[in-house]
Amino acid sequence: MEDELVAHLPTDVRAALRFFAYYLGNGTLDVDLLDGIDYRAHLLEYGSDLEMVFAIFANVLEVDELGETVNDGDAQYRAAQWIRRRCDPGYQVEPPFEAWETELHGP
Image (tube, rainbow, N blue to C red; front, side, top):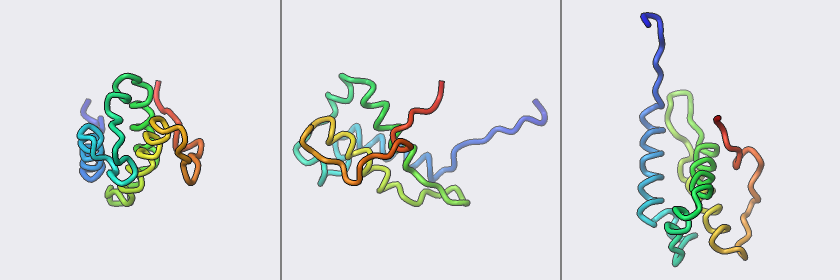
């Protein structure tokens, strides 16, 4: 273990994830787009939707060479668009999601 490197997510990325989870759980994720939609019960009822919301946020989130996030607001908005579409089938996501935004990574 002497040469083993342990890396952690940059502090800014951890903060972005924490705030995203807070707004999501608090029901205040992008209040303009999701105004009047209580999406929390829906996300908990269908776990795959919650999985996709976090995947979209993480896939869209960009980090610069210093490990600082550069677009956490955009990442939150794209996740909010997914939620809105799942709760409001008449809502049109603009621009439409690209495959890389909704890709699920991992085992």
